[in-house]
Every structure is written in C-alpha cells, then in structure tokens.
Length: 131
Image (cartoon, rainbow, N blue to C red; front, top):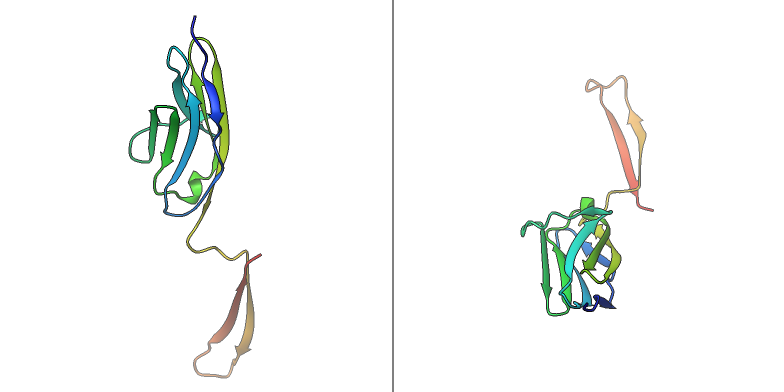
C-alpha cells in the first residue's frame, strides 16, 4: 500500500523588508508513492510562475520563495503534501514591512496668517508621529 508523507519540520513565520524575497521551507518525508506538494496563500492556490512564486521539492525539502515582496504579499501561506495514503500540511505567516513606514497620525496647525500682506498666503506646520 505505501507510506504517507511525514512532516519532519513545519513552516516558520517570515518577516522581510520590501523588496526582499521570503522563503518558506518545510522538511517532509515524501512517503511512497512520493507526495505531491501544493502551496496556498490565504487558503487559495498559489500560481507558481517561476517569477513571483518559485516552488521546489527536492529530497525532503519543500520550499516556496516569494520574490520582491510588497506589503500586499503579507498573509498566511500554507502547503499540503499528499499521496494516496495520507496528507500533511503546515502554515506560517509572512509579514512585509515597507522601507519607509507611513506615519500613523498626521496633524496640521495654522501657525501664521497675515490678511493684510500682499502675498495673501498662510504657512502651516505639519507634524507626523508613528504609533
């Protein structure tokens, strides 16, 4: 009948700064017949295109590389390794930080206004703070 795949080491959460690549790796004893590996993001199949997403299953190592990560790539990634005997799975979270963090709060204060001036202009002091 054969052996089902065995998860020897699960996926680990990844944190990267855009535009770095992220690589998820799991160790999977393939079983007999050899298990097929499928990757998912937020429960939906990942389109492994060799550009944005590259998947490999060599020996006991199953991996998915997400190239040039953007904040939109953040989320839960998972895989299943399945043969006719059994199935195993693992999931992990990808966190992507932008190079420049957007301020969490921006405020604007009018600091001077001279209605008599020939320029009729106002100056504003803008401050930003991150939480």
